[in-house]
Amino acid sequence: MLHLQNFLNGTFAPPASGKYLPNSNPATAEVFSQIPDSDERDVQEAVRAARQAFPAWSNLSAEKRGRHLMRLSALIDQNLERLAEAETTDNGKPLTLSRTMDIPRASSNLHFFGTGIQHFASESHFMEGVAVNYTVRRPLGVVACISPWNLPLYLFTWKIAPALAAGNCVVAKPSEITPYTAHLLAELCVEAGLPAGVLNIVHGTGAKVGAALVEHPDVKAISFTGGTQTGKTIARTAAPMFKKLSLELGGKNATVIFADCDFEKTVTTAVQAAFANQGQICLCGSRILVERPLYEQFKAAFLEKVNALKVGDPLEEETNIGALVSEQHLQKVQQYIALAKEEGGTLLTGGGRVHLEGRCANGYFLQPTVFENLPHTCRTNTEEIFGPVVTLMPFDSEEDAVHFANYTEYGLAASVWTQDLTRAHRVAHALHAGIVWVNTWLLRDLRTPFGGMKQSGVGREGGWEALRFFTEPQNVCVKL
Ligand SMILES: NC(=O)C1=CN([C@@H]2O[C@H](COP(=O)(O)OP(=O)(O)OC[C@H]3O[C@@H](n4cnc5c(N)ncnc54)[C@H](O)[C@@H]3O)[C@@H](O)[C@H]2O)C=CC1
Ligand SMILES: O=C(O)/C=C/C=C(\O)C(=O)O
Image 1 (cartoon, helix red, strand yellow):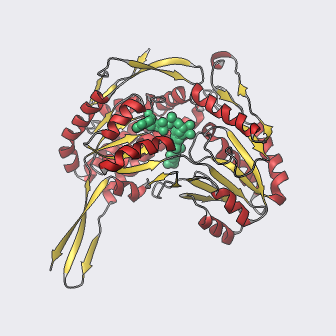
Image 2 (spheres, helix red, strand yellow):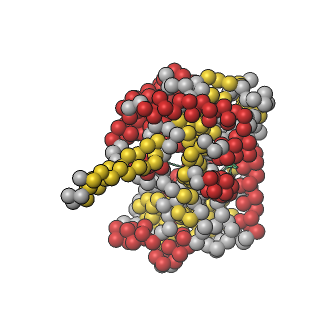
Image 3 (cartoon, rainbow, N blue to C red):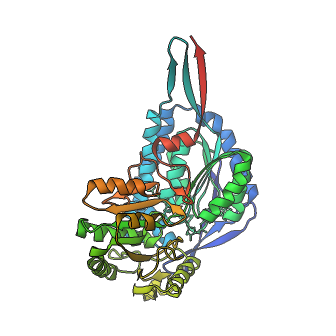
């Protein structure tokens, strides 16, 4: 049995409690590893190590810090297959997805910020004949990065890369549900020669490790991705301590389809947006709004493609939909399917658990599920389900489409499908979402601001936004 360890001050260490938690493969329901059940004592150690490492790390040149990150990125590339298999074992997602999306993006995150930091310039403001102001951006010190289970290494690196590049030392907590690739990354940190204490990883539950990190007075900033309720809990503790907070939370994203769209491209991408990663991406398009004249044609083509998706063993090449991340999460999604029926929804396809044969007989598989005939106001259409469950809704006017799309507490992402560019801009502008894609979905440029409005979060990640978050500006005004 694999025993993961915490990564403290450059070495692997057991938890202070001596206790471990079981970690299972969602495709087989078998426990394949034990992870440290850490607590505030391990967090103390990690923060102490990070504090010690900070002066030397923050005084390294941006180029040298960047080179460390790029070495790590290259090691991820060299270990692509091993990391992809680990991600799939831990999360249940198709291996093809881990191999083509999760792990390459983890490498890109480190490479992007490793190079980006070398171009990160501060501003200067000249007061004609009077003074010159220049702004210095200093790293904050010790920061916490708390990441979720849906895109484990992808989001773990999306947070630690800008934090480290900017000169901070990090205590990171991967999700206890998917800790494996963060552990493997720690091994690669040793191989890459990352100085001890610069990145520390503490495994364990949110209630113990996450809360201890948020409460720790020496942790100056928290970058968190996860559920909105957890984000609220973190904010309640961190706000009175005046910590910097970046919260990337849930979504209930609309796919808005007009009758003049490029039909084939739209249907294909709407299916991907709905069901990629078993619908467990905060950006997934779970409410599909279709202009009424196209509705029936779209519905037929959409259902045909959904019914062709293969739910199967994540290790098989032809699998499109793997296992949901845990039994608990499967049950939550099943409860939403029951709710959609109670709310009067018409089940168009799916709705049931899939029982595979062989090694995956006990895995947490669910059919891709589509409902229609639900009002835009109901719970199914306003709450985050975070699984392979979507609704179809017709609309009669652009105003209705925007009204339906905005009718949720969330405001993360949306996609708009039309060949009328003027309308595309107008609708994009009217949507209350931090990210709007036009005629595409999940096309990511790492330089762009990434994050949500309303209950979808606070702050933006990506590009200069992330580097600004992980630094404190100081203005120096020099009288001429
Ligand atoms: N926006 C997103 O990308 C994500 C949204 N979710 C949503 O959240 C729901 C709940 O999923 P969970 O696994 O429970 O997510 P979560 O929000 O509890 O977990 C995310 C991370 O936060 C940590 N955490 C939990 N409680 C904490 C606390 N009090 N202080 C500090 N850290 C804490 C967890 O250990 C994990 O590392 C899902 O059903 C889904 O709807 C979940 C994961 C990602
Ligand atoms: O940065 C991205 O490309 C995607 C981020 C996705 C999430 O934050 C999520 O699903 O939680």
